[in-house]
Amino acid sequence: MTKVIALAFEGVQLLDITGPLQVFSSASSLGGHAAYETEIASLSGGPVRSSAGIVLQTIPVCEISGFEAMTLLIPGGPGIRRMEAKTRDELSSIIRKAAAENARIVSVCSGALLLARTGLLDGGTATTHWRWCEKLAREHPEIRVDHDAIFSRINAKLWTSAGVTAGIDLALALIEEDHGRSLSLAVARELVVFLRRHGGQAQFSASLLRQSATEKGEFDALHAWILERLDQRLSVEALAAHCCMSPRSFARRYKAATGRTPAKAVEAMRIEAAARFIGETSLSIPQIATRCGFASRTHLVQAWKRQLRGSFPRR
Image (cartoon, rainbow, N blue to C red; front, side, top):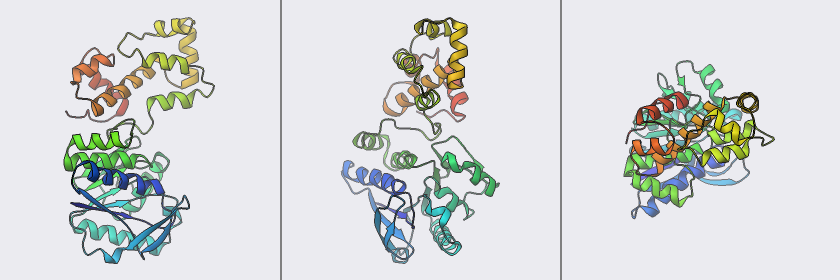
């Protein structure tokens, strides 16, 4: 059994704690054995108010006899920025102690800012919520900051993840490492997680970016049409014809509305679909490439690296 301890503080982001802990709890229920035991701890113990106003009951950190074989979760939240120096130093000491005792340490969202203070991330590649990536890079130049990744693995015992729900993705990845892909996918299905995301995926989905960029919904119908035909040839001419526009006018208006060329947008949607197939099915990579409109596995891998700037997942 692995003990998972979430380290709470005043103003902690509630979902940074409850999201991952629910994932671990569900794994224990679905796995048929008590794979994980979860707990929330704070410096003094007792009630801790989250940023959502919900109070969490915590045990004092001093009651933890040792951190060996544990997973220590460092959440984020507005409390990170308001935290007194003395509290930051005490929490940093606890994190260093856990690392020295061979605990697995993971951060969620702006929890990376606290974890970075310990020096444990120095020389590694870490990520955090997109809003705090610049701050992390500016204050800790010794850390390589990945602005896009959902989560990042520094080494076997050290992980960081992006904002809020990315903690769920990271927890699923840890379950896969501990107990295999089948249990991880079973938990994702149980929690109705729409997409089992890999760490190298961008923090914004292609569909969300398209929707955000077109507030008037000008091309929403086109995007739905594209998603139903990813395995087909989707040239600018074909897209323009569907919109009853000339190719030149369509290309100009589309880029003005979304910030991307039609070709780049289609490629992003294809990669997002491929990531979903890789995470949720047992299809071979060539089969996935065909379903998503890529000429071959090689073309899929090349597009993946262009879009996500990360290594292609191993099967």
